[in-house]
Amino acid sequence: MRLRTKIHRVRLGRDEYRVITPVRQTAGAFLHTNPHDRSMDLYVDRQGAEDLVTAWALAARSRRSLIHLPLRGNSGPMGLSDVPPGDQLDLLLVHHSLGFPPSRWKEVRARLGAGTPHTVDLPVTDFPTEEAIDDERYRAADRRDEIRFAGAAGTLVVTGSATAFRRTGSALHDFSREAPGWRYGWRPDAHYCVTFAHEYWGSPRAAKGVPSSLHVAYAHRWRAG
Image 1 (spheres, helix red, strand yellow):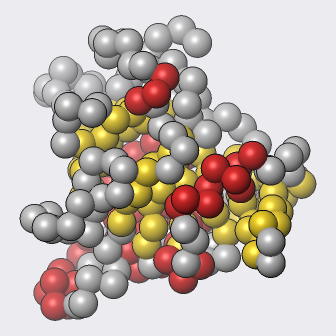
Image 2 (image 1 turned 180 degrees about the horizontal axis):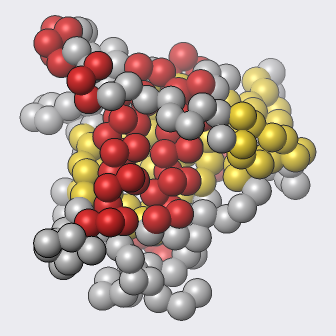
């Protein structure tokens, strides 16, 4: 799979950050939070779901890069009430080995510039199958391979190891393949979704600045842009 991206290099003091953004706008994705709810909602269409999977694959492979999907300002799906601009979110995926503080994202984003064109080649799928995931070993681990959420400058920052991104990316990959055809099956109005939690279900530790649950849902009807 060949992906056209832009590479941005931003220096803050002695630190330099490499940010990857897609050349093509991810129009079929809308992420928002509700201050009265415990979850964030990320609605995607077919292309938006594929873009999300690609971003997850890049995050698993690009240990030294920040993967940025600018989503604020996109049109939402039909049937969704107007969401205030302050509740709309961009998405940033970060490998945990970078030790990137979400609080620095606002400064980094302000210095992105035009970027340099770059082409990335990815496997058709970079995720393990459901059968290949060792749940017993996963549950016995020390939780270093969980994804974690934080909020910064109108952005959901998702941090995790390569294993965490591949494990959760497997669920997103299945979602991207199955969700578009679901409405043509025996339950055309059924809700199709996948949900991820900060650290793990039942964690006593809350996410920083955002709800601790991310609900990804398929929406085939969208408002005009």
